[in-house]
Image (cartoon, rainbow, N blue to C red; front, top):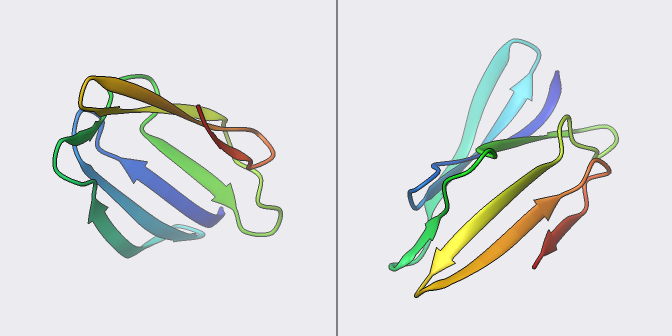
Length: 84
């Protein structure tokens, strides 16, 4: 697989970006959400974008919790990212 993986810490504040080159995984960056903002727990914890097409291997939904509000981030099969 050649592409990029975005990995989140469910229930936490960190997320990372990794390049996938065959069997190699090359870390690119790690960052944290602002204070008081966390990723919700749920089925999605990572998404892989194919480098040649921009599509994703498996569509995923993430939630973000912030000051008693919940927002949803949906990544579709064709690579569209929507905030709800």
